Length: 190
Image (tube, rainbow, N blue to C red; front, side):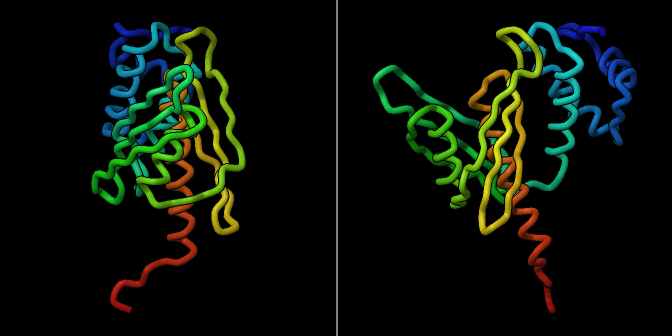
């Protein structure tokens, strides 16, 4: 398999996706995926096929209408101190900020997201897997959230495991919201 990196261009990126039988529907999707590729290449030396597959999956997820989007996060975790997190989210197009503490950095960021969204789902599963090998590998985080009898899985990937965790939690919240909209559609003017 061909390994892409920081200096790989748009044509090499497009060609590798074609070799992997990954097609992007629009030029806009390709641009978004290539932008994510360049961001990842700045953090990680070698980009493997598994990285590309996750990158395209995330591009497709973010192109769907999502109630919540992670804008920024800041986490502080020191030995002997309670970890804290601050998050900035876009919620229904408006910027929302919240801070919280937790038993660890992931717990702190999840608590900050809960505070920012006002959502209180129950975490049923938290799983981390390395997508590739090496210390610069992306971590793929899967969470399972339960709320009101509904179970959803969220996925996120990043070279920073706390950011991957936040992305997976927000992905799951968006799925809960999407399920809620389908179960109880709003009828404007009816």
